[in-house]
Length: 155
Image (cartoon, rainbow, N blue to C red):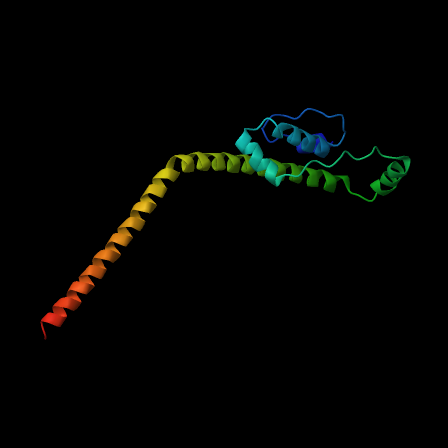
């Protein structure tokens, strides 16, 4: 039921995940996401890994007490609401995954562009700094000449 509401979970790289043996699609998606981080390019994986924490250890298998509690509270929850919530979460997950991949692609593009244009920008900046120094020197000389001429020629 969860798989149908979510559709096929997709990992960071866009490939369907493989079942890890867990019946929980959230755990399957999370574990496949971390497994697929290793297949990313070094720059991309460094960026992703700097913001993603290591996966939490798998939860222990349910005990009899847990199963009894789940059965006792299952009649309190409307299954249509759960299905709707799961479907909405699936849509949000797909949008966020798509947005994340788009941002990663843009970041890679920006890094490559900066790598090519960075030295040019630094050269232009240095040229502007030198020009400013030259202009300050010229204006200082003009002020000195104006002061000298003013001293020589009274008004």
